[in-house]
Length: 106
Image 1 (cartoon, rainbow, N blue to C red):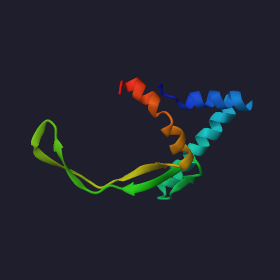
Image 2: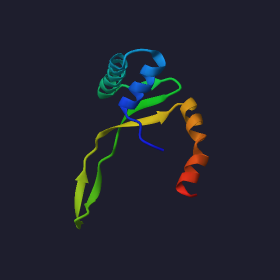
Image 3: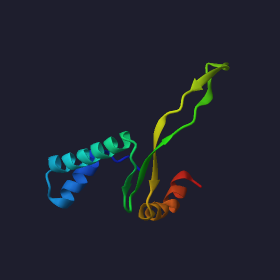
């Protein structure tokens, strides 16, 4: 399995739709910008059959300095983005388990 970049998606969608790569890039970028802006406002973004992006707050905790384990390092609470895949995505991704097992030698 390989990594797919935004550029790869732009080329694929451009070839499928007949739109120029610049048009596809603009739409993808505007979509990502809009999702990011909504999350930055604390909103939840739901994309049916894809998934839900939600802002959550982590609790404050105490970590350890790997170079000096005797010292505690306070880690403050922070906002993070959680993604919960939609039903369709979950089902499609679940089908690759045999491929992953074969790849990882399990």
